[in-house]
Image (cartoon, rainbow, N blue to C red):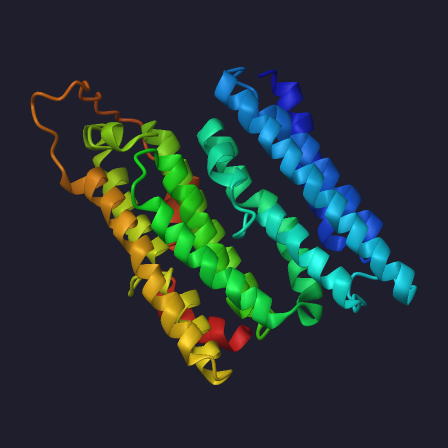
Length: 346
């Protein structure tokens, strides 16, 4: 793709995100989301492969439907209350429609169907944007309206997301699809706590963004998209593959890695809110996710492929690891010791 075109799309993404997260008026927030959607579509379809075109079409249709629902819910709220302010969102029907719209934007169950397909049809770098940057504006709207939304509905959607994200990821061989289902499961953790402690949702989102960005950039460096090719990449960058093991375990939420912080704080907050059964259920469902993260980690670092494999061993590269990957990998594995400080901030 033309570098000037890439620059325009990147600038549009930053502009759309900035407009949405800084707006108080629903029309401005909607405009920012539309700019974002239109900016990411050429990045999804840039390879001109039929699967990429299909992914871009699916993404456009779902995001357009979600934006229309969001606009409809805000208009309904304005009709009944006379308020266009995002934080003054009180009408019950509007709240229900908005929950559906945000769930569709983020890829929460039961509006998750588009996300694995779109991620599978996109390049790894675009997949990184779809999993992190594109979820920031809807997450901001979720945060700003969290006091108005129905906690019981959110809890049901969260537990369904954690279950389905873990369950559907078990049998996948495509790494992008595994990361898509991982994203759905993480969204379940963010959603379950948003009605009780929205700052914890944002903390979880920031840490998830860090860890996912590291995983995508590492996979992009070693050019791995399937489990079978992941098995043969250890010769290419052994130290990066070893780091990938820790990043995946951090995504799974194992102590003493960074990914354990949000899970620990969310379970603690749920028990304070007398929601111990929900905390127990979502914790048990995260074990499903742990299985496919371990499978990925095993393929990346522990499995030596048989000599009869059809895949060629890749040449060892002497190029130094990208500095941004090194910094992100460090942060996404070693933040647990400063968790008391993080807990006091939130």
